[in-house]
Image (cartoon, rainbow, N blue to C red; front, side, top):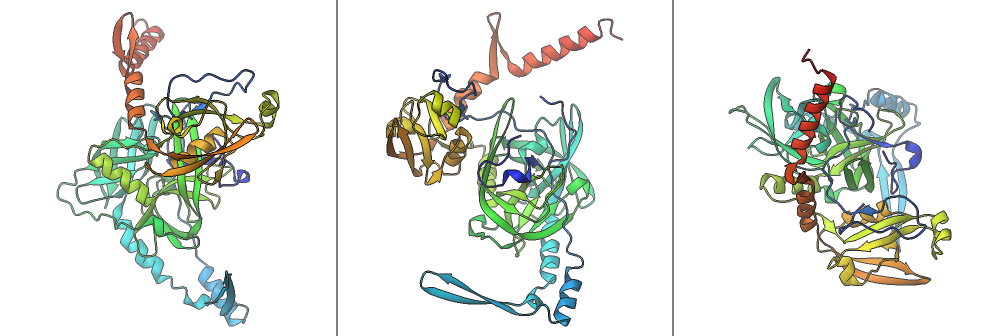
Length: 452
């Protein structure tokens, strides 16, 4: 797994999904045909925009964070006069704002009320896999029984069920967007009363806002933890042997997120959904104060498309790139020591129409400094289809700026799907799934030739 190249400090360790599941054996294209690597460039495979078929199958989920003792401590400090109303001045331009902070204003009934409101809208998701069982969380999206969760919670599951109000229900997969790690499952509650979560506005979040994580960390159903929004717009790319998951514009929080919280809710002080709990950053397999949630607005947008049977699309630029380092920059006579080297430009793509060429080194996209191919992919995906972004490149020793209007990756997805679904075997087209099934059968017969 990769560390956060943009946002989360590397010292916090690698980010991990928050699904609780047996650990399997260990095992970016921005469009176009096979790229050609520049002479003597790094042997690293060029990063391309692509629609990954799968995401990571590792662990992730959040745990309940305690605030016991905080109230008592505050009371003692106030009685001794060490804590009381405090004021500070915030200067913005020519204006000065006086803010008074009174610790006595904190009311724990807010957490009580939010927990009471949000808990009935969160389920525990149980899955069976070829290698064992796993679990995560899910958020009841509507009265029709649609539930939002993470793709890594249900990916490759042989069966899915949810636990809600002490009962277990079978679930079916409605659809998924692996590259965003969002999935929708459906449950027929059979007339049982359900409480869909109230939708909030993640775009309105500010650093310091109070939030609560709701889910089933380590299988502990109906757990909550309160915290604040620690940062916004964090991004990272996690990859495995079959594809990438692009996490962009994530919400960073210190509300506890542990294995089992994946797919659970991050709610605001009004109990409204503002995020889907997904990752934590830690040197261990437990929460260390840094958790991440997919913005609620983005997750709900994907869910709406999945439920409507539409293709989930993303911003697309049409480039294949490779990371520039000091070593390969010196070897290839480049004028900059970091950035994203353009290996290929897809014909007719937004990049091609804007005038970007093979050999350009991208150093900035939309005002964000670019130091790697992964960073360029993430920067593109952090924007919407139709956005016009400023792309700065070094062409030789000249800096040039291009206005690129980002397109949709729908055609790219269809192309890749058609390429990946079947293979030609002795003149006959066979699906990859069937081929894998035949291979597994062959392996079993080899290991047990006499049927014992």
